Amino acid sequence: MVARGRSLLFILTAGILIVGALAVAGVVAFVAINNAVEQSGEPVEWGTFTEHELVCHEARRVDSCLSRGSWVSDDGSRVVKSIDLDARIGSGESIRAGFQPEGFGNSIETGTVQTESWMGSFSTIWTLVFGAIALGLVSAGPALWKRWRRSRTRAEF
Picture 1 (cartoon, rainbow, N blue to C red):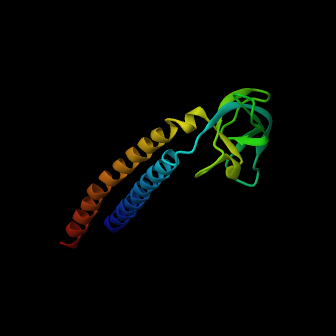
Picture 2 (cartoon, helix red, strand yellow):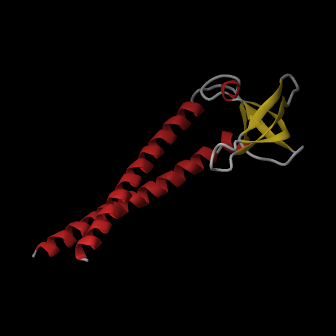
Picture 3 (spheres, rainbow, N blue to C red):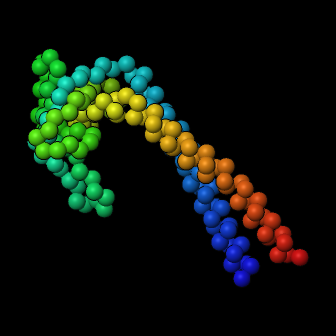
């Protein structure tokens, strides 16, 4: 019974350490990508996105639907038809969105326009969320590891 408990503790500890390491790697990658996008210096054209249809990818297990519609720049000089929005809005509704014609992750390559929250502070919020998860997991891992090591040495006597 004691050996089974130690094994479960070891698996839990190893899992937390692995997930913690992946969370740390995710934070680093997310910050690097965010910096590349923000420092690309490419202009963002602002305009209005209007949904015409909701497009869902049924092959995936997760409900992944996007609004597809048209985007018109504020000055009317650029009109893009059949482009996706990085969020869902109601049929026929409109929302302010940014179109990035050039640079890393541009709207032409991705076929997507982004809402203001994505172009602005949204990435910072996700960096903080991933950072908090990573910190919690990485700080809990060593404590569980020590507990597992202690349980192993006690069982040997």
